[in-house]
Image (cartoon, rainbow, N blue to C red):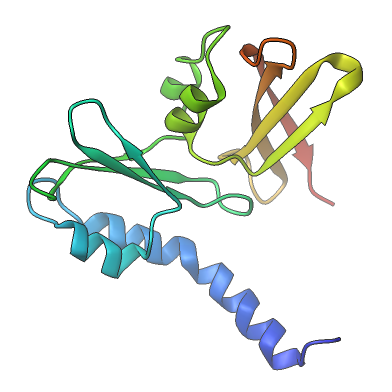
Length: 163
């Protein structure tokens, strides 16, 4: 079934303005002030909730596969924002260590854009679209897991020219 042109146009426009909405929302949310209810009203339901050892929670807002951000918003036990992070960044890429689990990586970067299994290489590769040099190219960060033990084997980046 083919969708009417107006639906396709509206969906495309919505996807184009979402990053702008995130920018506005991130500027207006303040640690120590913004509540869980306010975050939910602005950002919607989180893609995943990470329960931290200290009783706090971190809500994940991954913008994959088309976006280049993943926001982790941590709430104190009082349900008020304590920290807001955009976790797809060079500092976090440097935190990946051989042997880390898939749960550790999900907690660090959020949901990946893609997951691919390469049985012949004994690898599962998770990939995130990240900041690069648009509009000429798209850049991706990848974590390679060893399928034998499930831990991180290595990381890599790739650049894909557009066109």
